Image (cartoon, rainbow, N blue to C red; front, side):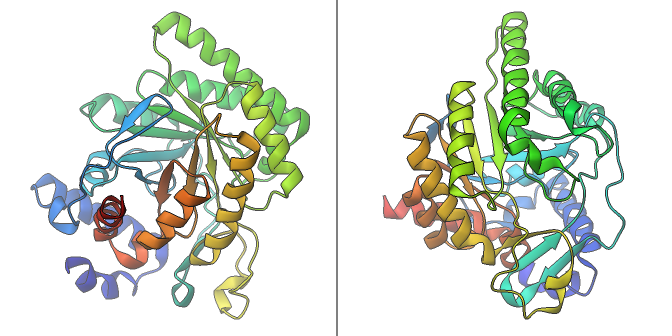
Length: 340
């Protein structure tokens, strides 16, 4: 109800300004103990994946809270887990504004943010300050000016920094908004990156005695051969999960909308079918050896159930929250629990 009142006002603002204001309002509600009033109660629906016990399978996708400034307020909305980032070794401003656009008729968003963030040290400080409650993943990437051949150095640097504080770490190799980044999903570049991450993680396990799972986030625009090859490398290097999928460069289904001409990755409703197709193919290639986190176009309990039937173990939302509000999380978890 509260979000229904606020949404018309937020939608009068450009998308990025509304995003920041919405998070500030959420923090304010959390500070005075009212943030749970924004959400529907989410029942327990335990899921075990990556050797982690999740209270429910519905998480927040990376991108909403890039710097980890709002973790506790977001967890209060009923998410089973929250993923923050993407974060890079050094701060960077991202691409010029405007860089986020609503396609309201399609319940979709186009963004070309470009890994704008305050750097991994800022994020680590936020993780240090908060109480270690709730499951928090950290999505990591490379700085825009790091040569692709040296990308693994940035990913390993971020892994080492966040390792003591993260529930899991995601290597984001699929954002369309950093030039050349998606090349990391293929061939020798992928093999090198995953090998370097696995080696660095082995060293961290020896020094800390703690095993932190590593996931890789892939694009919906991979073809079947690319999905199969990536799955093979994930298994070979002992990664713990695959997140499917990131945003798409396709404009199928939204070509008639003026904002569709904007550059960037498309998320939300139009991505639902393709992301599910990727999950089906990925599940076949992984054969149950590595769990899948399904994300892309989930806005109803039926969408969530579709992803789970396709082969996902966990789920993530983002764009639908903009259009449906924070009450969506509890509604989906409750419906999934009722269907069990």
